[in-house]
Image (cartoon, rainbow, N blue to C red):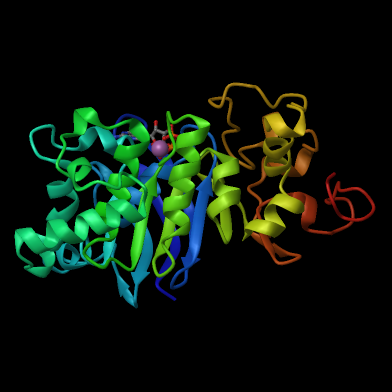
Length: 322
Ligand SMILES: Nc1ncnc2c1ncn2[C@@H]1O[C@H](COP(=O)(O)OP(=O)(O)OP(=O)(O)O)[C@@H](O)[C@H]1O
Ligand code: NI
């Protein structure tokens, strides 16, 4: 196992305090691709930032995130710096726009190699050009010699992924790599991820189709909670949590079937208990209590539907909510 995230919670100490992430656990094996999906504000980005120690001072992070057995949450700055960039590479949201406009893209893609592997500029840029060709950013060396303003959003995003793996990272943490891209460009980002044969990926997205294309496993977050976690195939074909079911039913290719309450504002969270209760078509009295994470049919699911106890379970006969 490469990354083992155990009960990570994040609370912002400002004002009344905001619980941004609550008890999230997931694992990423070598070469495994894991996506975290969920709507805006569910805590996806904050989870990645917590693992990487990139949150502001007022964030209180608890839990553990073992990278090859070492807990990153408690890690000292110097040790963390050795891992970040070299072993784990982070591709932030909107990162294409973070490229330095004054430096050629080829040089920027090569930079981690120069910095972490002490490889000469010329050699590193040659390596960057190879990688950029592999990611279909451009077949000509001239493309690498150009400045970011000549690049499309999709090209920039793929350049960021190339930059992420050039220094030999074993793992990429990516935040919304398809945001703002049209379908054709999303396909190219999918290709870039598919070509990451040797790297593990932990990727945040609210694009379920993208998650379907690239993931081995999917974790679903809703209002700071992880509500379901299973293999991608299982989760997409047999979603168990009502939120996962509603989300999949609402996808355009499934005919945009919004179940009642699904389009409600996401601020409408329940205070205690199941956060999805106000929007859930199966909501019952029991849902005022916070459901535990249950192991059901190979999924992990946080929902009272699956406790199976008489009077508490409001699932249909076969135990499935749909
Ligand atoms: N510095 C902060 N102080 C207080 N609350 C914050 C801070 N940063 C984020 N939050 C809150 O944490 C919650 C989770 O935010 P996060 O950015 O992780 O959501 P997300 O799932 O990545 O959404 P999106 O899809 O919009 O990127 C939000 O409710 C947000 O308001
Ligand atoms: Ni985010």
